[in-house]
Length: 70
Image 1 (cartoon, rainbow, N blue to C red):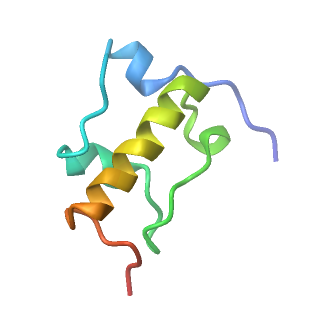
Image 2: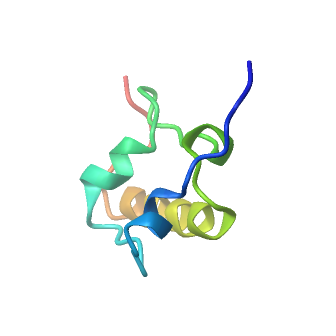
């Protein structure tokens, strides 16, 4: 399985801050079990992957996103 280099979604769309209240974007980077998908698979750069992880953690703590999906 060869993974090709993708352009980071957030860099391409000039997103400065990943908001934890924007659940539609956050859900795009979660698998059906509500776990985060790796940056290699999604093509997100390391900077935005860290911001995304922090936003998902905040959204989970605020009960906007589930910790575990059943």
